[in-house]
Picture 1: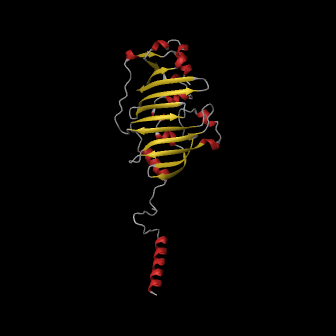
Picture 2 (picture 1 turned 180 degrees about the vertical axis):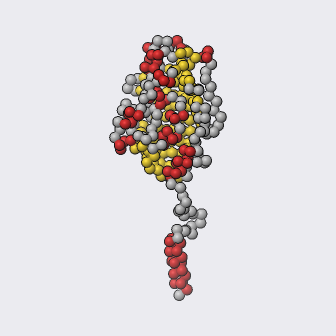
Picture 3 (picture 1 turned 60 degrees about the vertical axis):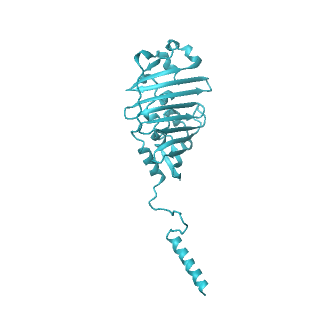
Length: 262
C-alpha cells in the first residue's frame, strides 16, 4: 500500500512539473519566455558593430580574395584585393587606399598592363584614381575600400528568416534584392528569379555579441559562378591608422586604365 501511494505521488509530481515547464534534471535549463528571437539577436549584433573600426578578410569562391581595414568614423579604408576571371583570363591585383575621399591604387593587371599606355611606367607607385570615373554599377565599385562594401549590415540587411543554432551562431536566409554584396552589380541581381534572390546565410558572434563572420551561399549570377562569400571581422574598436601615400609615391592614372577595371 505504501509503495502504491509513493508511486501515485511521484506520477502526480511528474505531471505537475511537466505542466509548469520545469524539470528535475540537475543543471538543465527549461525554456524561457524571455528568450530573444534570433532576428533580434542579429539586429543587436549588427548594431554593436556600427561606427567601430575593424580589420577583415574576404573571399568569394575562387574569384575574389581580399583583406583590409576600415576607419569607419573617418570614412577611410585600405584593401588588398585579387580578382580573377577564368572566362577572359584577366587577373587583377590591387592595393587600394581611400583617404578623405581620395583614391589611390597599386594595380597589377598582369599581361594586360602592357596594353595600357603609361601604366607600365608607374612601377611601384600608387595611381591616383578618380572615384567618379569608376563605373558605379561595376564589380570594381564594389571592391573599393568604402565601409558600405564590407560592414555586416551590407550582407544582412534583408534577413527573411533566422534561427539560433548556438549561443554564437545564427543561420537563416536573406533577400539579395534588399541587401547584397556591393561587388555584385544590382542589375545582375535584378535578373535573378525571386527564389534565387533568397539565399542561406550563417552569422557567427563573439562573446560580446558582435558579428565576427558572415557567410552567404550565393547562386550563379551571370558570369559569376555559384559560390560562398565569406567575410571575417576582427579588432573591433581598435585604432586604425590609414594614411595617403606620399606625393612622391603617386602618379596620375591614365584614362585608359578605367576601361580595364571590371
